[in-house]
Amino acid sequence: MLFYEPLFLFLFAPAVYLLYWLFGAGRIERLFILLLASLLFYGWSEPVFIFIVFASLALDLIVAREIDRLPIGSAMSKFWLALGVASNLLILVYYKYAGFLATNLDAVLQFFSLPGFSLWKIALPIGVSFIVFEKITYLVDIYRGVSKPTNDFRLYMLYVFFFPKLLAGPIIKYHDIAHQLEECRHAGFDDVILGFSRFMLGVIKKILIADTMAQGADIIFAHDPKVLQFGDAWIGVIFFTLEIYFDFSAYSDMAIGLARMLGFRLLENFNMPYIAINLTDFWRRWHMSLTSWIREYLYFPLGGNKGAQARTYFNLWVCFLASGIWHGAAWPFVIWGAYNGLFLILDRLFLINWLSNLPDWVSNFLTMIIVMIGWSIFRSASVDQSNHLLLAMVSPFGGAGLSVHIPIDYFIMMGFAIFICFLQRLSLTLKDFDWEIMSNRFPMAINCFLSVFFVAALAKGFADPFKPFIYFRF
Image (cartoon, rainbow, N blue to C red):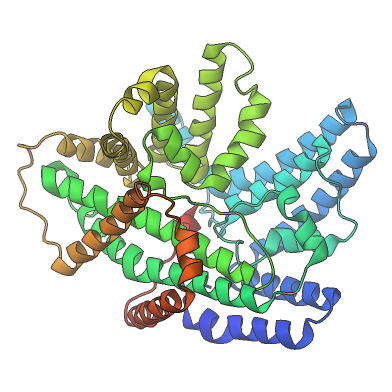
């Protein structure tokens, strides 16, 4: 169920908010309505996998209770934590990586002329990576003494299944939302207005910009990469660079807006990442909830930067290799993670200092070249396609094929999307300028502007086939 589908816009969401405002005067009633809506929302898309999550939730609650009654850091508390984390990772490995591992094992066996290995097709449940990561935070937070296990299983179920952020984040750490879950406060009028404005912004970004960029990227990436020309290769990567930003940030906008309309404040997930002046800066701005999760639950346990410098670099590289693997069970994702890890190490060695000596516009441009090369790997369906695409991107006089035909309106929308990113960079040069202050100063004009484009986006959405959010695959 997509946020901008007619089923959600005209049936599910109105029904939920009507029940919320008519019967949600008390905390218990609000909790029941939100939990019921969230279970229905996920069960609609995953009617089988939801029962596996139920069983996993029950195990989490048992493990959490055992960890809490034991001394922090004791051998038995570590055992229970390991059991809880392993059981959650097992779900992720089975559904997301079993097929990938089986395919590669089969290739190795055949290379040595041994009998092959095959595995039945396993469907990837929507949002499984986000669900598993959030469930792990609950157990680790309790083990660390950051939070206490809830005495109300409904709160934990709502934490996991809360429908605005369920399918593609932001990844919410339990200690960041525990108080809001316990309070389950009623939304106010300002929450509804601000939340719906944010939701409209997300729909506009998704349908008008991201989906158009996706169509352009699909044309290029469906072309034979062996005969792809230099200009077409870069155009395809630019299309995807804009698509993934506006698509994923659109989902975050919708999730934050919908949650706000229900009285919840979710943390931001993006902070104008394409204005970054080095790759470290980029990862502070891009998918911030994932970066924060990796830092707190993987980088620090590995030792962070407390050991030797070489160990710090190794920890950093491993974390971003894991980030690549988290994004998908395919070699391009693994290479993309290793690529980002390498440049983050180079940042620490010399790259940040070198870029800091350049004008911000120049360092921003060079950073985006690094990012776009990474996106070319990320978007490729195979290592072979990635290799040919990268070759075309560095061969201005190569490519034997004809230029790919792309409709002119795709380029117009590309220019508009680039202009938005340009305005974000330009805003940093304006003294005392702040986007939030501007939106608060001219709310009527901005909401009228959003409303017009919101209607246009819905019209386009009804006319064109629905395109799922990119991160639904992860």
